[in-house]
Every structure is written in structure tokens, then in C-alpha cells.
Image (cartoon, rainbow, N blue to C red; front, side, top):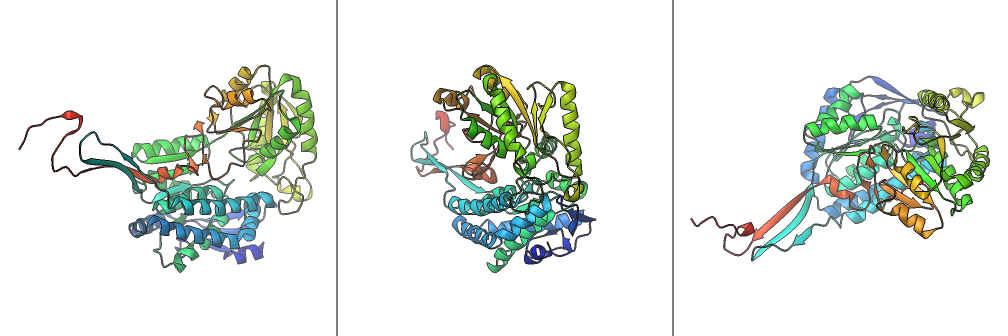
Length: 510
């Protein structure tokens, strides 16, 4: 652990606000980073105060004036260098992700790879910030749209993807010409500080202004509420719970700012009688157990035809029973701990509620103890039989709980699938072309992501990521998600020498 910290330029006590290149003294309370693996303190962070936050915003605003005038392809070149700098530290960053949030090493390194991939994507995007040209209704006029940098933006991220979600926002925002202020989860502070030090080194080597990238770690009252309500930040991108997103959306809307919200997912998978059950079982295992069920894209509900309910349940039980649970840094471990003991308690409360509502546990759900398990953060992943209308099934419990729900017709399956408040990711397993087309049509999945014969998690960075309904409606990462980080401008140039008005209006002559 100490080698990882040293190689990433982290100390026993670390300042929680700065630009990656320079750091503030910080006047807030001390925050411990506790590993869910064994409950040990990894290191400490001195949190930012309200005045520290204001210094960070000032730096971001000052840097924006210079950064926005750097040509977009040259901004892309800086992001390319950032991606290469992360490549050099991929293994250490992956280890720190495992230490701090409990992901198995393969998933943790995969997340670091996402940062590298989005850097590569953003480099190309820096040459494709396209506008449109249009035909004016007036003679000898030219009409077109263009996009300009938006300003300093705020990014709030959750613990479960301590690097990837920030990079989806930050790297695209950088090529768009924005500066970025990042408030990471208080449960994943060291990972955030480590990558900021790497990125800050790239900015310093290129003699760019301090404040292009910024981080501020602090409590809700001193930092979080100030960031959300700050009219100096035209966009707040927030990832977290639905309750958090509602609050952020309301506050940002009250000042007529923009919010990009990535909130809860209650993701369903439909498995039909035409499915390859072995393929479905493998996908469901990873989708439900990966990251210990703590992904917004985790498979929560399997909506399976009554005829194959038993065979699929048996296949999943066999697969679940082979999952090795333990230290995520060790080879062969497929599931690490939940983020903390409170998450374990919430899982147990949910399982008790399930029983009261009429469901039953088919497999797992125990809290493990003894040796490493005495940290109180380890559980066995759980398979349950349930009905879609149970109040608990309508919610997102951030834990490895899988609800199996029987259906009779495809129409009924889609009704169940869409019959939850959330709308992030979805999938159908079938080898029937017509069934898959129904699921992907406007009468099918109501989610922002819809897949056929792959699970709900593991989205590629090339496509826009986000969902509908209580998931917030935001889109990050690929496709044309860059537009959220820029301001759109419609322009008309009159080269006629006459003053012709639109819609044929005549106003007289001066």
C-alpha cells in the first residue's frame, strides 16, 4: 500500500484542493480514506473550506479566459498527453482504486483504461466540434450555427467509478474549451488526488495556466452546496442517487443553469424462450456481481419466461456458487467488499423487506465473517424470486441483489421492464430477430441504453451514456455528448447591402 501511495505522489496527509500542479493549505476538517478491504486507514485528506472553494473557482475562471482561446485541436493535443501520462501509471492507479473502493483488480485497471480511452476519443473529437450551415430565406444572407466554450463547469462523481465518470466529463469538457472543478466522492478521495497530480504535471510541462483542471474535496455544506448553487459555473454534471440528483437539478434550475444528471438505474434483462441460456447466465453473472453490485448499470432484475425460469435459476445458482469472494487485489477473486458497513446494513434491510413483501431468497445474501471478512463489508451475492410491483423492486438497492421475475408474453415482459421509475440500461436475450426488434423499437425498452444478447453494464465510451425518467436524462462520453459542454450560437451574415427582414416583414425606410 505504501509503495502505491509513494509512486502516485501521495502522502500520509494530503491537501484536498488545488490544480494538480499546486495545492492549497486547506482549512477544513481531516477526512480519513478507509479501505473497505480490511477497514484500515490508507491515508488522510485535509478538506477544503468555503474560502478554499472560492480560491479554486477564481483559478478556474482566470484559466478559462486563456484556455478558451487555445485552438481546439491544440487542446486535444494536451488531452492526448494526459492519456499517455495515465498509461504510465495504469497499474498503480488500478491498485489504488482496488484499495479505496474494493473493486477487483481487473475491473479497477479496466476503469483506468476507460480514462485512457476517453482521452483518445476526445483527441479526435477536438477536430470535430461541428456546427451546421443553413439556407436563409433572405437573399444574399448566410446562416449557420457554431459552438463556443461554456465556461468553468462543476463535476460531482460517486465512489463506484472514481476515475471513469470524471474523465468522461473532464476530457470532453477540456477539448470543448472549458475548465473543470471536480468534487469527488468523500469515499474515493485518494484516487481523485492521484490522477489530478498526474494531469497537473502535464499542464505544468506545457506551461498552461493553473486552474484548467481543479479539485475540491469538502463536506456538503462547505463545498457541495456552494458548488451546485454557484452562478459562476454554467453547468453542473452530477452522478449519484436520484435524491441527490433531484436536489442538484432544483438548485441549478433555480439559477437558470444547466445540469447534466446521471442518477439511479434499476436495470432489467428480459430472457425469452429463444435465448441462449448459457450466454445469458454468463452475462447476468457479471452484470449482477461485478463491482459487488455497485454499478449504476448493474443488472437488478431478470425478467424471464416462466418456461425457463427454473433452468435459468439453476444455472445462475451454479455460477454464483463458484464466485470467489475476498481481497480484490488477489488473483482469482471475482467479488470484493461493499464500500462500507452501512452498505451491508442497507442490503440486509432490503432482504428483510423482500420477505415481508412476499419474495424469497433463492441463493446467498449472507454477511460473511472470520479473518478478512471481519471488516464487515463482505457478503455473498444474492438471487431472489420477486414480483415487479413489490415496493422494494421499484427501488435501486446498491448491492448484489438480483430479482428474478417470471413473465408469460413478451408484451408482459416489456411492461414489467418499463414499469419502474428508473430508465438507464436494458437488455434482451433472444436469438429471435422479431423479439429483438420489438425490444429496440419505440414500443420496447424505455431506457437510454438498450442491448441485445449482452448485459446492461460495460458500456463503450464511443456511445453517449445516460438514461431517462428518474435516471436524469443526461448524456456523457461519446457521440455528440460534447454539445452539453458548449454554448450554441445561431449566426446570420447579411452581405446584400439591403436590410431585408425575415417572414417578409416591411417596416418602412429611414
